[in-house]
Length: 235
Image (tube, rainbow, N blue to C red):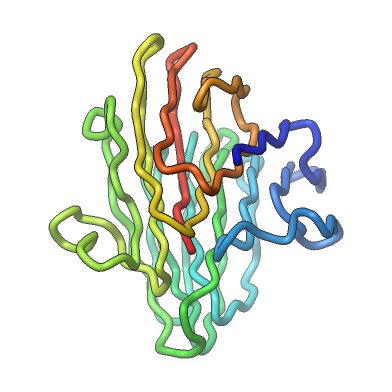
């Protein structure tokens, strides 16, 4: 099954400083058919105006992955962590028993990002935060794991840890080239091209469309344009 969810069918909220598209039910957007995909619960496509952002707010029992597409986001939390995550890089916050954080675009330009929430395998645990650079050249023509809770994806791949049987992977693909991903039995994949038109197992998709996949052993992606891909694989 490959279900392409066109960008213009996603939930939409424009708050002025924040222009958000919701792949799944979130805040005031509710769609019974889009409540999540496997353990993936939220995929928000956010554009945050310069010198604005999310004031301190709480989370618990959620793995929150932020993939910055353009600009940068600055993080501060109740654990004492702070950091700036720039375009192409990733940060992960395990909310655990509870954490308060803020996320601001302190740049003089708009920041765009994907914020991805994955339900952890079990509730609780001490909260945590981390970030890493993932140069685009290192993921050229192949999927690179950027965050994972799957055994074997840790230090050897340099992936940021999450507390779920799930993997977040990214790739850059030149126009005319292909990249493949093997999906295990019973697992769910959700794929978005941050940029570039793509063809997934023969089905065409535009930039920022959501592509929900299951019961497919091998995902083959052809880049029609130069493309940047983000994929979540979960139970």
